[in-house]
Image (tube, rainbow, N blue to C red; front, side):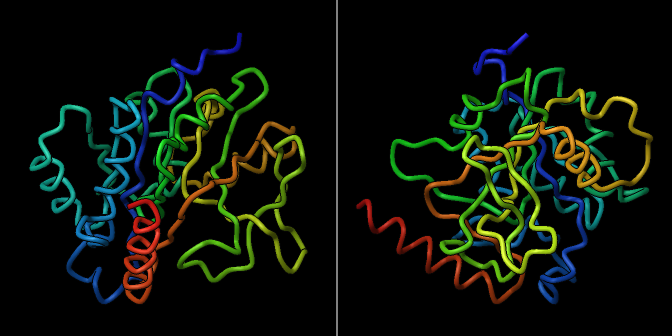
Length: 248
């Protein structure tokens, strides 16, 4: 049975357990989710985006310098946020979501990277678009994509091609692909059934969904930023200021 959009994406997970190696030396003493960009920590941008769009159950996983992230959550004083503790073992992008599954409910939920965030144009909600596009009968994953040509802070060769019906394919052996995974996706929790406990990459489940044509993409129309290195912070802040000035 197809779920109505209002039942989709009321829960979310923000991935905050990584080591932040590329962000060194800043991350030698501060976990990457707490690195400040445009006056706000990365995790703050993610959670503000979620809460502004009606997500009322948010799970954050912690590992590296976990105490600092947990202190930030306590100071935020939000009843919406729960912690999934990975201090004993870093579970990677798939294992971390699997561990948090009992806290995320039975409906499709969002997963966000803490170092990728976006700004929507006035009156536009990317998360609401994703809710409306997610067909729970045909779709296991819906990935947010960014156009390579307009992305800020990304220096790779792209990740995906997209067909006219919205399905996506990996770049594979091609030199270049026009779309980047933008660090946010909707997932149906059924994909986590029968997964073994322990560390594994979500890419394993993406590949399975790709094989069966159950993974789709939505191209973002706005400003998308990837903040993976110290040098990327300044570029991101300039891009944010310029983007916002267009609507003042």
